[in-house]
Image (tube, rainbow, N blue to C red; front, side, top):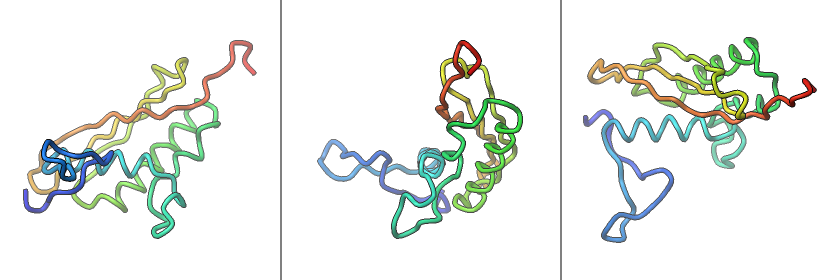
Length: 133
């Protein structure tokens, strides 16, 4: 697991001794993926291109075109910013869209172990109005 490494937990917190909490192994990768997807490009002044452009789609209609764009943006950002995984698939699920949530199922393999994993990332959208507007 040396390839995966250790890092500061996200969100940043302290451990039982009052030091910065660190994460390692699989947890490090999960937190890294969540951080990449939760960061909008331009949000970090010293690295403005870091993040994922799915935030531009918050007001987009919940349809197959938007799902394809979300999957594309997730794939692009993770392939660029998370070198410890190989993406297998990105699937957008509309099951919770009435509650304002699209579920992004990210399927990946850890490069060091060829261990398949998945992570479901909730993406919050503006739900459709009852009157269709």
